[in-house]
Image 1 (cartoon, rainbow, N blue to C red):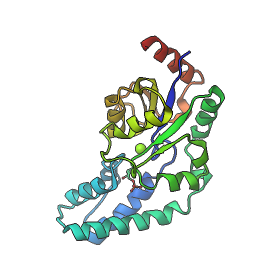
Image 2: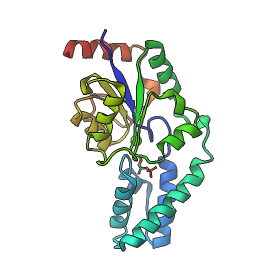
Image 3: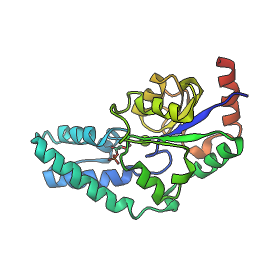
Length: 223
Ligand code: G6P
Ligand code: MG
């Protein structure tokens, strides 16, 4: 068996914070006077906060000064944090705890690789912060997904080669980033949307018991 490590995206894989991002962005869109739908919200998944605002303003066909943009980035995040501070362990997505337990039992290290600057806070809120061997978040990267930077830093934290890393992702940009990093990509969510992933599951609960051991054998064959 070969040594492998795992890199988890946060939003949409470990917890469902997309609904809180939606409420906070929708509030801003309401304030600016245009409609922002759940379908629009899909475009913001895996995308940085700054880029999310740009996409939102494009949807509303609105141009703002840099100063106003900064103001809205702060107010949106303040609003979002009101929801985050109410989160608890009950918001961990089904199958996540079980998967972390499996990795612990197999001695496989795992780190976080998220675009969110709020990732450490969210992990603390749901009681998972101390389980991760390392955290790469929106504060530690200069290039957003689909750039592979976030996952390559994750591989360094795992002391592993990219080819030995398995990435769990729910966003198209995240799967692309993992593939560009030459890692094994596992898409969590709609298989059609995430068709570029090496493996697909609708949710973490669908991952077979022997999946991780199968990946260990697979990476051993490659190297
Ligand atoms: C994740 C989410 C995105 C979000 C980004 C930044 O990748 O999927 O929807 O925009 O994090 O989150 P932040 O907490 O820094 O605003
Ligand atoms: Mg995500």
